[in-house]
Image 1 (cartoon, rainbow, N blue to C red):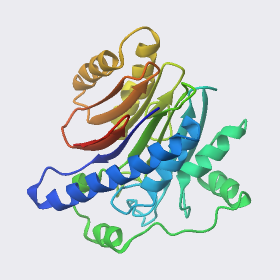
Image 2 (spheres, helix red, strand yellow):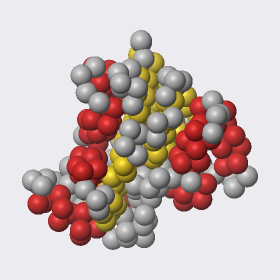
Image 3 (tube, rainbow, N blue to C red):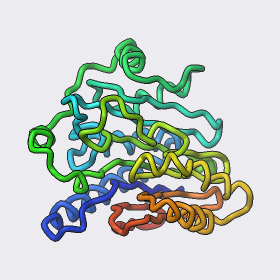
Length: 280
């Protein structure tokens, strides 16, 4: 049983070292709780649970504390993919919800499994997801001052391998901030999040770059075709470099290989196998 999570990128500025440490500490705690949960739950259940914990932490740009779009509204996107069933569930630009990953997870049971905007919100309300305002004082201040967004690339993700050998991956984001309203990121697409019986991948970074390469699906396809997880990631990131892309990924293969890589060395992540690891 293995678990790896990410908390997106942080600024390399020395003024953010305290925030970096806080994110690393939070990831260590959350990956530990997620690994404990994995002992008695499936990979897909664990991914939804673990990402919910990340969404509830204001240090990350997902759920509570998400970025605000240019019209002053927060719109959230999240997805989860079950490597056992190959089913993908996602919500795009959903508003006024606490844990979009839980809505995405519920959609795995439905034929229409990816919903956006008002339709996603109506589905959530019909399934007892109450009103929740994800805006924090800090995010409101950043919005009003239009601060540099590099410090706030805190999309979250999780990949899990359960006791039965099944994989799942999930991703959640509050967007990049000040974007055109209803811009669609990679996080609720198979470019940003993908799993099958061979590997699971979750991405963070610039959504348009990730979509351009169909990054998660590209890596998983290569593992399916016989690449090691590392080789699949490294080859795909060499291709990402040709478009000067900005991204980071975490992944687990069916044979237990755990790997992460990024185009810019500022992604925070944590994994739990036999022991906890927390790095940037």
